[in-house]
View 1: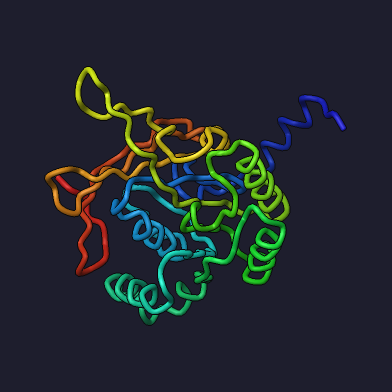
View 2 (view 1 turned 60 degrees about the vertical axis):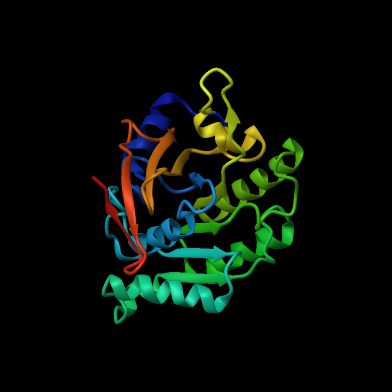
Length: 256
């Protein structure tokens, strides 16, 4: 039913949404993509985000609001994933912090497909069981059954995720890959279309509220530049920064 403008404005005064990631990068029912080429530490960044949200600490240079997180890993074995988590939790001195650990639920499976009814309903059941507020999906290629380049298949995935968000109020973070770079014949370098460098249908890029790129810096070992490229819900232009990944501590430090 239509409503008059006074009612709509009153709603905005009485209902506020938390910024799970500050500056409007991630709110309830919002969709964020964290994408980049191979070996740009996307999965480590995803785990670091999960810990930051569960503890309410800053994620890199961005403030967070504490939230219960479901992270679905479709790449690493359970043993390898355990090793990664143990290193990250230990380096942050959270090994004995049951409150933080209890706010992170982990599904370690490549069989969940979000563009199928079964997969969507299964994830919805996990959200309700563990009272999840943010879902981190690592990664899109492994958690979708359809052809990511197809607009038809992309629409199925988008429709399922919209249904999931509308019924549960969760925010969704997708870990995703970059497409193969396009060479600029005039300069000899790569031609960048920024957010449209994500692999797959442009429908995915248009659907996203936030897109953050992780890019390797050539000549600098373990250094990435993290750049918010789309930030539809932000009133400002969120800053990007360079970070150096410390493999011994499994953490990211600002790189100067």
